[in-house]
Image 1 (cartoon, rainbow, N blue to C red):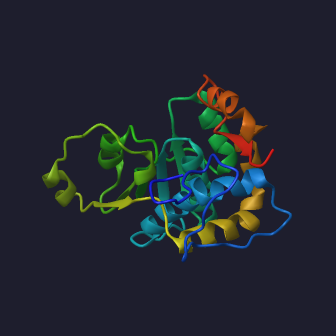
Image 2 (image 1 turned 90 degrees about the vertical axis):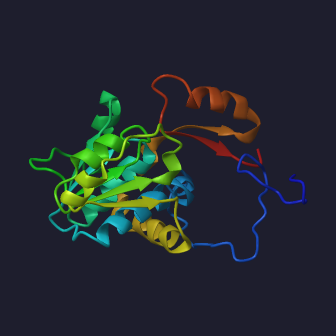
Amino acid sequence: VGAHGDLTGAFASHVQLRAGTAIVRVPEALPAAVLAPAACATATAWAAVARAARDIDLDGAAVRIHGAGLVGISAAAIAAEHGAVVEVRDPDDDRRAFASRFGATALDRDPDVVIEASGHAVGKALAGVAVGGTAVLVGSVFPAAPVPLDAEDLVRRLITVAGVHNYGADDLAAAASFLAGRGRAYPFSEAVGAVRSLLDIDAALTEATAPGAPLRVGLVPGR
């Protein structure tokens, strides 16, 4: 309970919905493991891809994504459904392999779009985008270490750098619609490992931070 009596945080049996909170109806048939991350990772990924699409026609475009976390693989699937050829870079072999099931492959040219979803490759993202391309930095993975910025290089290469700080209500609705439609072709439910009771939160947090942990560990409130 916060200082002003408001209920905050997600690790709880109840949550307060303030007036104006975006609410999206979803099909009963969709698994909770698919829908739970929608109000975070999937919606943020949608916002990042949509921002890139404002500058670049994604149909046939080359898209590179740094980071094979849940935001990265979700962005890969969304970009692939927009007709892009997608590459996902991550130092973890298993995560790269998992990303291949979300439409990731290899690029044979410099990317028109780079989405930085790791928080650790900002410099590589800016340096790797093709002339006239767009780099989207995803705010949910920051803070990150400062990087030097060569303004002349960005200007001469006609690079657009955009930031996406999480998502808006429209992005959440679009993400839920994607998961209920074309997103069913991708194994989103496998991104969530064990599902534990809220009472077992300590064990869940330990599992989530262990080496080789799944992208998400589920918690069921109320039991």
